[in-house]
Length: 339
Image (cartoon, rainbow, N blue to C red; front, side, top):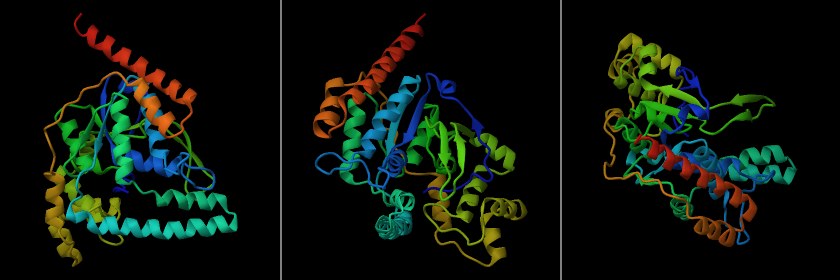
């Protein structure tokens, strides 16, 4: 779900061409959940192969990656590791949301309300260990590196951006900013119009770039205060204070400067606040990784997707052509650096 900072964080619209030749660390779980959520049949049923195995995540990985690499962008997927104990409450809360949505999905189907059924079905997505393994296998076959984080994937991706190993973190969530990512890219490769939930309204969607330094300067706060702002409104590790959103949290920080002073003035407590702050400022990450982009294994991808999961050979071939072209571009660009 992630923290919602859209009300106070300014983003600059971008085009894929703006990122030509740059590397992006993609929050893998964030992307996979997005694929599982939106790649569905009209009644909300996810894509499946002839054996009844869900394939929405594989479809999203293939076609989204193909389009991004074809635009001259280098991808590296970063997978979550062991979730911190601080996240236990959030994980259970999300599970309860899914259980409730499943009941409402079935009820909507019985009533013949396909729009509501699909909306509820999107909230039921579950990422299994098997799906994660399948995703890693496909990513390798596509010639894209992936990193296994020891804990939170966004923390690892943010560290990679801080070290300069990648240009930015690509995620729909703002959490990577709290982990110190210098640049966040939202809506990577998502263009066109998107229907707002429960409204007959469509909005234009383009890639967005958010600079942490610019955000802190505009808001007039430090990185530490930015983390405290997140804790006030609620993160994946705490519920926050009821009635306090981004704008009110910012006002309180400007008035009191510190989280402790705010909590004292409000007469409330946030359990594990200091531990949560420390987790954002000094997360568990790994420096033991390599980023190597290789040619796609054409035969391997075709065997996995077409033979094992009944994908269309023609569509997969078109996507793989984009991978081949992207690989040629990378090699030419690397060669050009010598002249």
